[in-house]
Length: 125
Image (tube, rainbow, N blue to C red):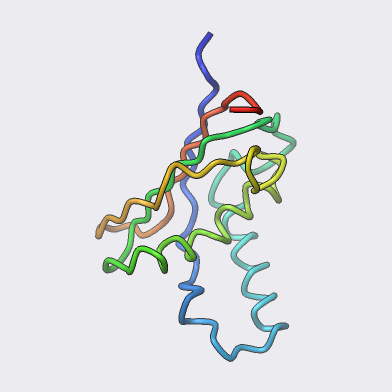
């Protein structure tokens, strides 16, 4: 039996490492909610009541206007990963439920966005 796999394409979230410094929490919260709504509208798999992955390996690729530092690229993925939990695709974004497959790949191409591949794994793996 092959593992269940899901490919998602989400909008590119803001650069959390630099862009949001000094921003009031309410403004930050509105921007985050707007991103979640944009992701929901963009990606059909986030709508409805999907069968959640009990545990998932998560691979992320960023399609950017320019390359970023690796740690900033990882921080930029936070809202996209949070969308998976909010939509009910994964139980939680902590291990062992959601295991990141490493730092995100970075590609300088258009259209900009985040490509996420979820692969179901055994809960204790």
